[in-house]
Length: 164
Image (cartoon, rainbow, N blue to C red; front, side, top):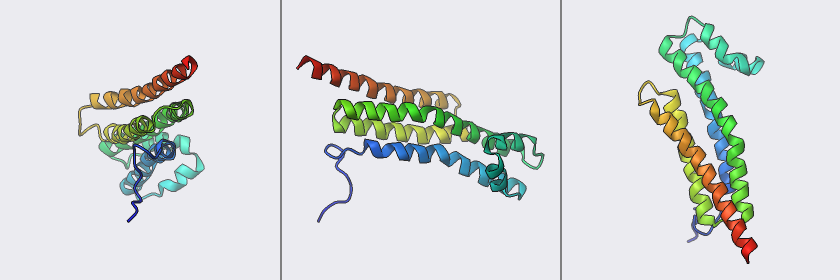
């Protein structure tokens, strides 16, 4: 019987992690909108559709939202911005690694690791009132480090090609 799961040593799934990273980047917006609607009984979708960049200001000024929920919503919005800022770096690192011939297992491990770290980053950032805030910085730096590792691996693979 054939398995539908990829063999992470043989099958390159690293390019598929780029759209997954985008979904993870968008996920805090859904949390923020749902939390806002639950706190105010107002449809957040109207605010997000009209001017998504002012949603954080709308939440800040809304007195119907308690401070704990307001903090989580505002941190979710900040997590979205941070994810967008890092998405280009990640996509470039995955592309560089694959185009230079880095081993499939290495690219899969680094890119899946990045996805796991970004998921954890979002959770830690939004709910940092429940965990040690320094974990957010550690998760961020780990994600950037994984991207840099892909670039270093790409450079080493290209150097190996030149020497041949």
